[in-house]
Length: 92
Image 1 (cartoon, rainbow, N blue to C red):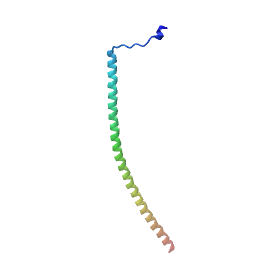
Image 2 (cartoon, one colour):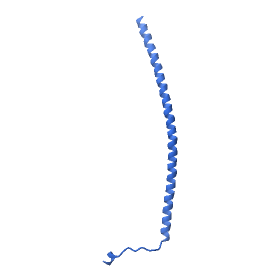
Image 3 (cartoon, rainbow, N blue to C red):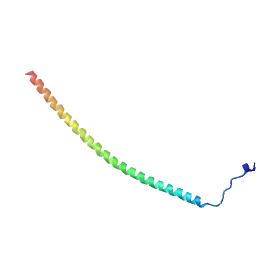
Image 4 (cartoon, rainbow, N blue to C red):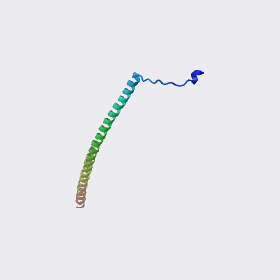
């Protein structure tokens, strides 16, 4: 029964192993945070580059769409002329 009523006791001494463990933990955490910061910076730089690449690609796609629309209009005009010639040839 006396074991159940006993209270916790803490030593006032600090072991050298505890100090090394704590320093290793703090060092590992600091290294992790430093590497994470570098990785985030790299991702942000790549995102900025990708935005400019995307803008250039969008502009090129607009130009290509304009070219295709222009060529389709030319083809349509040529088809209209061809149909008119065939209709005029039948009428004669």
